[in-house]
Structure formats: structure tokens, C-alpha cells
Amino acid sequence: MSIVLAKRLKAIKPSPTLSLNAKAKALAAKGADVVSFAAGEPDFDTPKHIKDAAIAALNAGFTKYVATGGIPELKNAIVKKLKTENKLEYTPEQILVSDGAKHSLYNLFQALLSPGDEVVIFAPYWVSYPDMVQLADGKPVFVETSEAEGYAPDPRELRKALSPKTRAVIFNSPSNPTGAVLPRAALEKVAEVLKGHDCLIVTDDIYERLLYVPGPFENLANVEPSLTPRTVVVNGFSKAFSMTGWRLGYAAGPKELIGAMQMIQDQSTSNASSFSQKGAVAALEGPTTDLDAMLTEFKARRDLMVSGLNAIAGVRCRLPEGAFYVFPNIGELIGRSYKGKPIKGSVHMSEILLEDFLLAAVPGEPFGAEGHLRFSFATSRAVIEKGLKRLAEFVASLS
Ligand SMILES: Cc1ncc(COP(=O)(O)O)c(C=O)c1O
Image 1: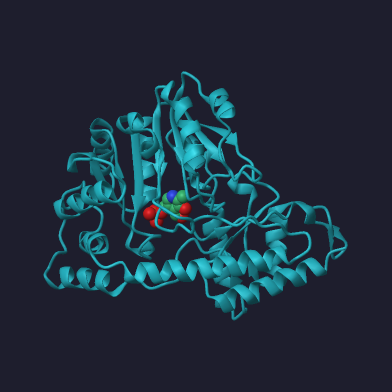
Image 2 (image 1 turned 120 degrees about the vertical axis):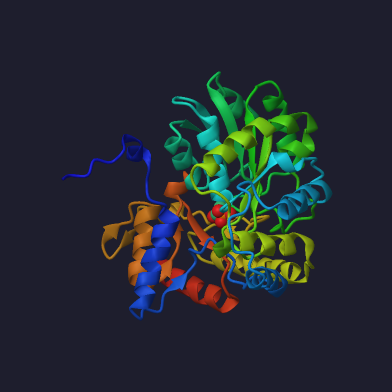
């Protein structure tokens, strides 16, 4: 029998970040000394008090199914966190705990979109947004933002992209891949446009704690409270608490939408891991010492990486205000020759870097930003220095 796959798969591409990571890991497993700037996760261990809480839950037999939407203790801790840290008021019925922020977004688009509905996505974007929208039969509508403007959306371009079919606009600040943080003035301009257009606002705040500029972190609902009733906050534990493998994220938003998302989760994955949720309670309520130390280290690595990149002729790198990514502009190197053949683009460059220089870097093209590479600095300073040396050797070999 030949397997006929669903038509909706035609629009979906494999995640380039996950596949590059897999390729780098396969080379390393064969003994190659690969330096990876591809990681989308902190390299630190999960803080001990969080692990202890999950271990205690396991030992106490907290290993059964729990409520699909999340254990009450965690939902209450999320409500409290949103109120005290983000100045946003939600009730526990407005919260849905899922298997990571990625899962929250997936549920959201499945619950929101009908065929042909549009979702506005600012480019450069996290690679999964367009695919998740398309998996829900929606249509991504891209709005370009520029490096020169710090990747702040141009309100006129946003206005042009909105249509009666627009069901949602996604924001991600601090951003993956650029590390850019949208300042209040930029959010205010965007809010002015969105006040006049009845659509959902999705704010993916997963990197909110990884901020290298003075806080507090602010999202669109903070600068324009009238938008709160139609805003969905998506967040999770992966990046802030170094809990990527625990698979825990959440969405907070309008009750009807959260209810619909929960119904999808009821019929698909049910509850997120019970003992992970106990760990997450400890994450939200415990000390921040480990997180503060992590942030200080990330900032030092960012500075090391950016100054190292800017010292390489042909590479220009903006100083990111958040997250753990830099997004160097390598446009000047495209078209130059490597071993007598022109470099065709960021995907081609990333292949050469991995195969010939054992340096894993994610190409900008799948993030909607050709002419860039994404480097993660969620790795040690020694590895950063080694990787930069390899990049410099590659650039020096070009003619
Ligand atoms: C912008 C953005 N949103 C969401 C996620 C998903 O995080 P998780 O599913 O681990 O909570 C990621 C992970 O890379 C991300 O970069």
C-alpha cells in the first residue's frame, strides 16, 4: 500500500533549527569536534529547588492524570505571577497549561483559525509561527521589519497588512531570532493601529526574563490596557528557568478561547506532565538567585560574541537587548567565493560552516531574513571564542 499523507502537510517544512541541531549532534557522535551556536536552549542545569520539587512529587506518587488545564496550584501561581510581575489580571479559568509554549501556540491556532483566515507575522520571525498557522489552515501574512529600525514594526506596514480576514497578530519580544526588544514607544505606535482593528493579539513572552536593558519587561497589553481583553499571553518555563525538557508552557487569554484550546487539548494530549507542574510551581515561587546568575553570565557572553563578530571584516552584528541570540548580518559575504564557488546564501553558508569548519549556525533564510545567521550564545565563553575563531578562518578563506 502506498501511504497518502494529508494535504495540509504540503505547507509544512521540517524545523530548520531542530534539523541543524540533529546534524551537528550526529557529527559530534562520530567524534567530530563540533562547536554549536545552534542551541535554542540555556546550557545551564535546571535550578536545584525546582528539581527537588519534582522529585518530591514523584516520590509522593504524584504520577497520575491531573486536570487537563493544569493543576490548580500551578494555575494560581501563574495568575499571581501575571499580576505581580506583568501587572495583568487573569482568573484561573483564563489559563491553560500545555506541553510547552509551542504547544500553547499550536492549540491557539487550531482553536482560532478557519480556512483562509490570516495571521500577521513580523519578519524576522520564529520559524514555527508560519507552519503552525498553516497547519491550522490559516494564511501567514508577513510584515518586514528592518535591522536599522531595531526590528520595530512600521505602523504603516502593519496597517497595510491588516484585512477583514486578519484573526491575529503575533508579537515576540525579546525576539527569536534577533534578540530585539520592542521599546515602549514602538509598542505604543503599534497599539494605536491595533486599537482600530478587531483581531486577537498574541504576545509570545517566552524570553521576557532574558532582558539586558533596564526593565520592567512590557508587552502590548501593558502599554495599551484596552487591548488586554483580546490579548493572549503565551509564556513557559523552558528559557527562563532552563526547563526545556520538562515541556511546560501556558496561555492566558479570553475565557472562550482558552476553553476552546482546552477542548483541543482534552482530545489530543490531555494534561501536561503532573510532576513537571509541581516543579513549575517551585520555579515561580522559589528564589531567583540562580536565574540572576544565569542572566549575568548571558550578558557577558552576549558582549563577547558581539564584539568578536564585529571584529571580523564583512560581518556586522547589532547588540541584542534580550534572549540569547545574536543575528549577525553576513550579507557582504554572500556572493564571495569559497573554494572557487560563490556562496549562494545563508543556507549554503551554514552548510559550509558545519561541514568544513565544524561550526553549527542556523541560517537566517528560514526566519524570513536572508543575509543573516543566527548564533546562540547559550554556550560557554570558551566555546564562543573557539567558534568565533572558526568563523574568522572561514571568512579569511573567501576570495
Ligand atoms: C519564540 C519562541 N516561542 C516559543 C518557543 C517554545 O518554547 P517551549 O515550547 O519550549 O516552551 C520557542 C522555543 O524555541 C521560541 O523561540
